[in-house]
Image (cartoon, rainbow, N blue to C red; front, top):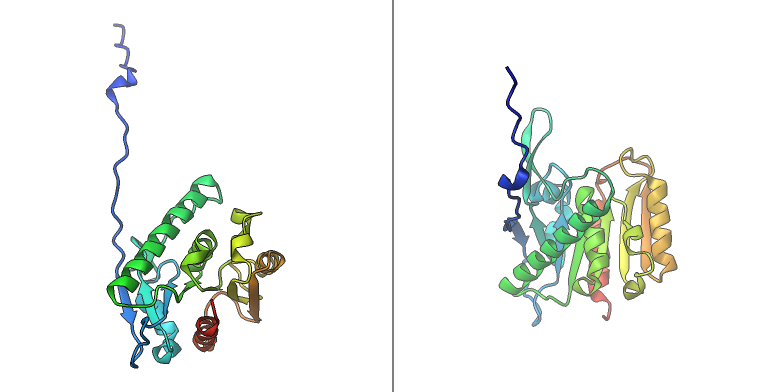
Amino acid sequence: MRAKAKNTDMSRFIEGRLPMAHRLTYTLAVPDVAAPASGHALVAALHGKGDDGAALRARLADWESAPFAALWLDAPWPIESGDPPRLGRSWYAYAGDDAAFREELLRMAAIVIDAVRTVATTHGLDLGRCGLFGYSQGGYLAGVAAMAHPSAFRGLAVASARIKTEMFDGALAPLRGFPVLALHGRRDPHVSFERQVAAVDALRASGVDATLRAHDGGHGLRSDAGSALARFFAEVFARTP
């Protein structure tokens, strides 16, 4: 008996794309002092993969007395991490540094900036004095967000994350004079210290006011990171735009 041929007519299958709304939860810490007429300055902080805003806030306890409001954002994608496993958050999925990944970074950067502007407007903060900090995975995203939208921020800081200057080759002119601080361990097993040095050198060559603070540790935030970051942003906000 002859077997029936399978139906290979693909016209029955319809592919499409539906929009999805992202929900970003956040915690906002406001200084316990009277705000200036324009409102408090604001620093948005992006946590690392598998963490959340609360975990990063605990690591940067020195910010509790900082002269600016701190916005701790939670990434939109839930992921399982740790041992024993717990629920963490992720800003994006990484499967190779290709065009799709870079497009995703830019898409998430726009979402973060929209979140920062919405929170600042809702709570009467100073949109003209916003800074951005990112740690590890959040640092990669923070670097792209600041370079793609330099007018949205007065300064950028990253820790244990390389600034992806190659995404903006020849297009860093709008960042001339822009303050950038990079904290990085010389023995970081996940993010090459040498490549971060090269990235900071590329920023400086384009006129960016970039500073690299290296330490002898690996991947992580040192105990003095919070105070160093708080000083950096306080100095940034004190500058004349």
